[in-house]
Image (tube, rainbow, N blue to C red; front, side, top):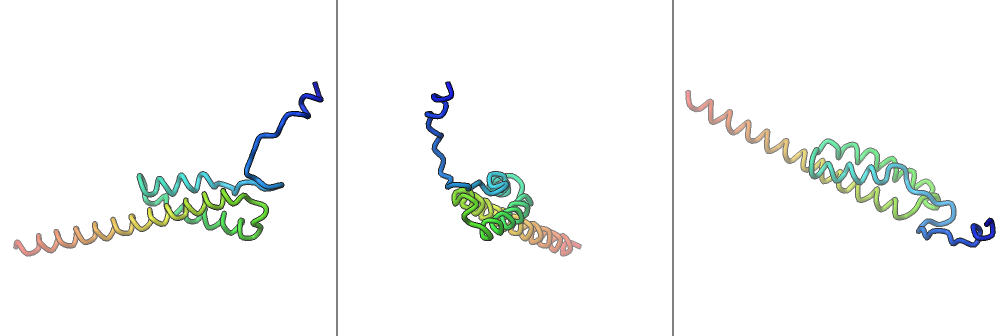
Length: 108
């Protein structure tokens, strides 16, 4: 029985020897996507977490998989887009309130 166990092939992974995924890589991507679709302030969390993970990757690139670094970068980009949408939405709301309040002041 032990001989059969030793002869089994190991599952294929794209990791090199001793490599691991960056912490929270998938969570960063999910937060970035949700910041575009659902709740823009989540982009701030995706950006902060992404910066921390990329800092870890840049300190020791051989320790982490390149695929997880790409996932973190994609999450950061989505987070930045979410933040830009939040700023744009805020500016449009401010402009709308300003226009309608100015129009209301001219009536009297």
